[in-house]
Image: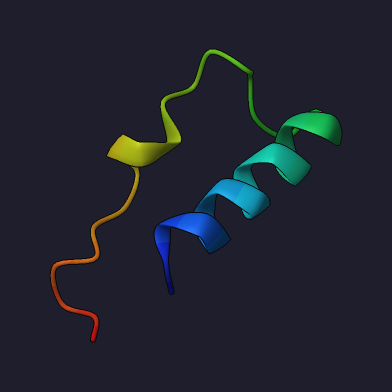
Length: 35
């Protein structure tokens, strides 16, 4: 995973009405354990 991939997923989810556009998606994950 990457920050770019999470951003793409978040933007698609907002378009579909899954997440509110005010949701801070960067607080929902960590890349601490990924390569």
